[in-house]
Length: 266
Image (cartoon, rainbow, N blue to C red):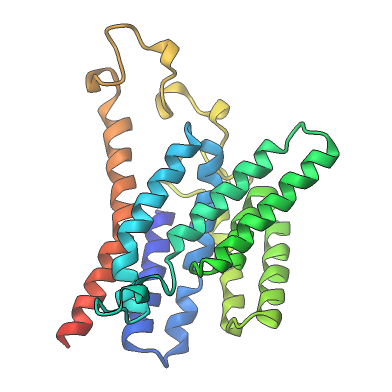
């Protein structure tokens, strides 16, 4: 349900950008989308069984999304191929965020001097997002890292306000971006899509999930019951999840492409 609201906020924002650029109230609603997606990225990083596969999936959909993104938001033309990389979409921001989180995770249990190097590397990765002109850039990566590093919900709101305020003052960022902080309370609600979640602990760790609610360990599979055999996985736990994930990933490039087509026809 929360992902649905995030997609809805994003759609409203992009409709406002495309057809009602002067209507700030529409763009204000859209500010709620990015923090929710950033929260999902941070949570997904901790829950995924394969972080590199997670990163690859974001990268693939980022590449797919870049064409419609450049056409709609940067007025790219096929006569000027370089115009398609004047700015890159938010999925690339999340790719950089995943790389930064990997570095921070790798720094655990390292000596202090090595840990400092990993943290400097994570900041460097975040700055690389700015250099590559990803959507939200340096700020976007730091926002994901804030969710990854800060677990207390109240502190998340505080750090989000400070982070956004600093970027509004130092970077060419519209003051309306401060409204993005209002999205954080949405992540505190125990949405029905995850019945085991509470407002306190939000997303549970893998160890807190019953086997039937998560992915089966390989050791629980017999020689006959391999990963390739769908019958050994509960269909209602596996395929709907995969399908929903694909739908949410595909929504990003598809809705942008449709908006661009409408602008071309109007």
